[in-house]
Every structure is written in structure tokens, then in C-alpha cells.
Amino acid sequence: APPATPAAPARLVPGDDAAILAELGNRRALNTVLLASALATGRLPLTLDDLRGAIEACVKPAFVPLNLAAVDLAAARMA
Image (cartoon, helix red, strand yellow):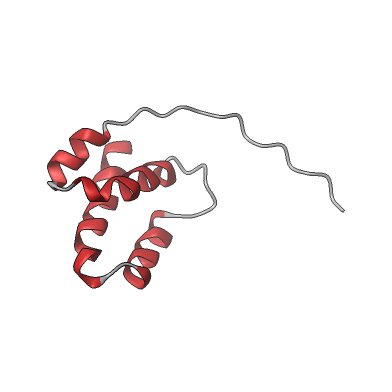
């Protein structure tokens, strides 16, 4: 087996989830905000587009717009 690739050092990236949720008007999007914020750092092997696709494929249709808005807001705040 090939040698394991060393993990990148951990990095704390503060974010204001409360402000994003207040702007969205719904705390139910917290998990999406946190995941989108983590993906926006570029340190995970998925992209924001991967997350958007998963939301469209797996989330109940009534909640898709809220979660897509959460991704966009979180990504914009991390930029």
C-alpha cells in the first residue's frame, strides 16, 4: 500500500452563523450553513456545487430554496 498522505494542519475559520441565519430568517438551515462554510475553505474534497447538487437531489422540495440560499450566503461570507 502507498504511504498515507499526511493530513493538512487543522485550521479554525471563524464565521458568524447567527448573522447568516438571521438573514435567512430560519435556524433550520444551520447544518447547511456550517457545511457550506467548511466547503468554502477549499480544504475538503467536495465543492459547493457538489453540496448544491446533493441538496437538490436529497432535500424535500419545500426546503431546497432555503438550503441553496444558505449555501450562497455562507460561501459569500467566507470569500
